[in-house]
Length: 286
Image 1 (cartoon, rainbow, N blue to C red):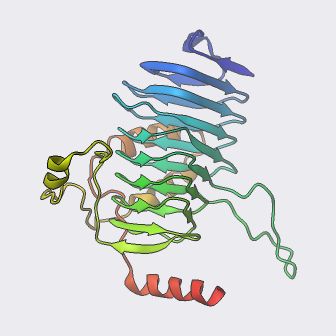
Image 2 (image 1 turned 90 degrees about the vertical axis):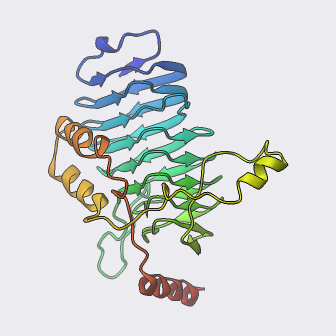
């Protein structure tokens, strides 16, 4: 086991590679129990109350710049998985992240997270069909777009894909049904509340009358996302499965995700017919 705190120099670690180091690091602990793992820290990463525990081999943890924002993360990662968080994300309290069975969590830029949020890309135990004796609960990667707001006590489960610009309501459970861009969802399981919306990061807690009045309109289209030529989510999944070692995966993430400035890279289209069929299935189950 290799244990890293703010006291130990990163270049003392053997068998694993840590690239860069946080600008600030308070109440943090890193533990590495495997080999051939890569942890990348961008410039201006500020970590607080963070634990990173690597329990296996060939993992990549890629933490982008948070500038003045403090990132709070609790990561347990096992074998052949990737955790990527984009630039300028805000965490109110630590995000709880458990990555298993070679599947991944990709989070875009400029996301906002409330507290007591969990990400799990696998069921802890195996489930089989009685008749066929085959496994029916495969692990699946999770993809979160740019500028996504996730509310209090949300559970993001395996297979979740959230398009850029959307809102996940408090105490929500997301499943493998894609959540389109610029919409809000809520409930257990998550269902559409409102489409064609966008949101801004400023908090209204201290607003006075003048600020409330001036906030009634926002003319910019900065946070309205449109269909792009192709979905980067599916491309990332294919490439991460194609690249079998951590160095190849790290280089792919840096070149094609971190340096990708396409505003609409994580757009998910609203499919009205598919949404209606999904809601009908949920209604019948109830």
